Length: 187
Ligand SMILES: [Zn+2]
Image (cartoon, rainbow, N blue to C red; front, side, top):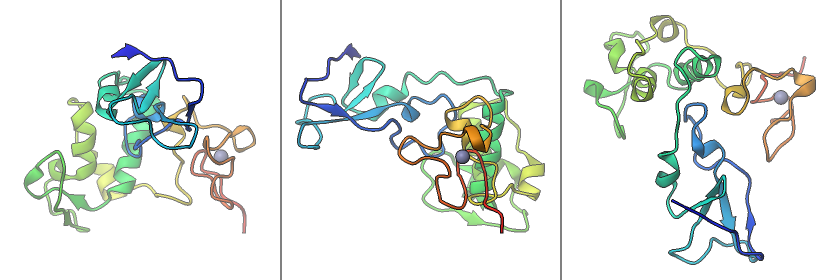
């Protein structure tokens, strides 16, 4: 890892690359793509990603900077709820972790809770986590009407009138609702 000075003709894209579903405080939320003056990626072998003064050829190099927040941190707890919301009824056959290319949908929850994809994702970063039977039984809402992805970049949910939305889209991000603060238009 080395300090990298962006060439003067280059520019940076918005922060956040392949970050969907990553736990809070993960570097991928803050990594920015490097573009040449033509808007392309730099030539092969040059840093493609930028974070806090460092250049990275591969995203995985930035991943090594991940410092997990404590498991009981409100942002981590919200991320955990979001995992159960997104992966409701989804189980890994045999409880295998890593890239799951097959999954079992079980709306009656007869699979062992230890095989639930949300639990497996949380356990990967927080070995002390237990399967959340309450969230398996009653998964939180996902998308419109959900509590919002505020935990990606904020310490607490912003009030709708103070919400800045996403870096690429102002509040309310989706027009009639906001995926950051959870606001939903009436009617
Ligand atoms: Zn908002």
